[in-house]
Length: 181
Image (cartoon, rainbow, N blue to C red; front, side, top):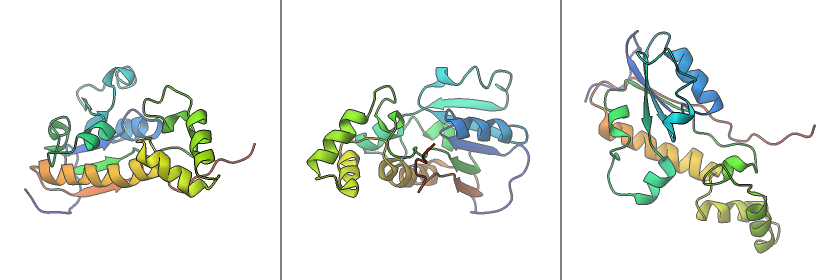
């Protein structure tokens, strides 16, 4: 392990967590102009085409953070270790969306409306309690994505990294609310 801090230099490796999301893709692409990027995504096939022609600058690694967190155990799961081992910097782009969208579902394929209405009714239409119920059920809520997952990622990086850790950056949409059109 090296020292903490210091300036990034061209050629340093940066791990971008959430490199298949709208923001994460663009962050990884832009960073790859100067640095080598380890993109951590849930499904490599969903983003390979976007990074076509950058294979020498962007390496993709598959990991499902919510599943890894559920399994617990190691300080750094095997799925994350190769992407974090040589990363001098960490950029976390895993934020969730304004409440509620299908991005809050576990698979991002189903409509969450039924689940949201169900927990709202169960909790007497108290939004804070309803969100806590969705947290407990493992949905992609701000608590599960922005709080627990980020702590998990930073801990994994601290345990896996074999080079100087220079920077950790978190991009977030915490507090974003849906606006009326």
